[in-house]
Length: 303
Image (cartoon, rainbow, N blue to C red; front, side, top):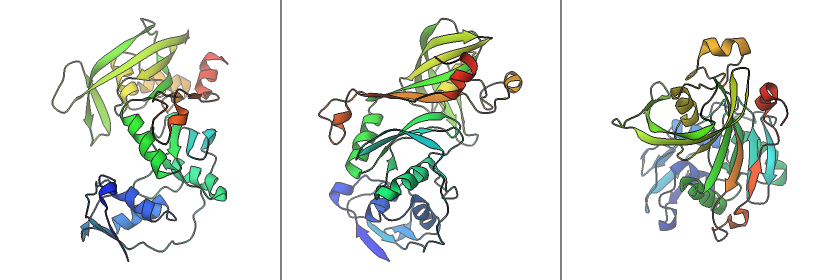
């Protein structure tokens, strides 16, 4: 057993990340498994990985012995940018960013770390996108860069642009969708309302039509707020469901195209923080884009 006392400078950290920093040779899967088996405890009690630690907390760790290496693929992403601190991955649809159950070995984070392993490096997610959404995800290779990038994203100083294909002729050609999103955790979906209801949060999305063909529109979306399923839910609420979206869209509209995953990609990211931002300020003002978005070429040709 290893025992750690949380220092004042470490207060506020998530338990799972605290353990990962103390035991950098362990995979996230092992840490999640240990939490499920009550082999990681906070002040002698069972704890969740999302628990925020307080100064003086005692963290006891009994980590399970690895059952043997499980093969991890590295074909679920492409590297868009990499330096000694940050890696930007272009994730394929159908890849989990992370799996808090520890049952899926081929998450994006695991694949990136398999790619980095020969260099003796590791990286952690700074944010996430949905399983069926493609596109850019930022990972950090050290604790300082991770904390700085997470703070910049939380403070809306990282601008994200998405591409999507929607059913219908979107008019006007550009505008803003504003409303309220209420999350139903049991159904793992959100509902859009035009007026606030208990538990709802404001949601604002700016959009711009880039092309129209055959009853479909290619739309660029900019998230002003970052809510669960925001683009999918708001576009559907406005009458333009994403092609392939089985949750918020129309199965009958999707059927002729054979699409069963929402055609949505986080295709561009801009670091809008100032140059004096700790750890990551050297990236200030830089923009990175996915090299290609497959569904854009399929339905609207090469741009």
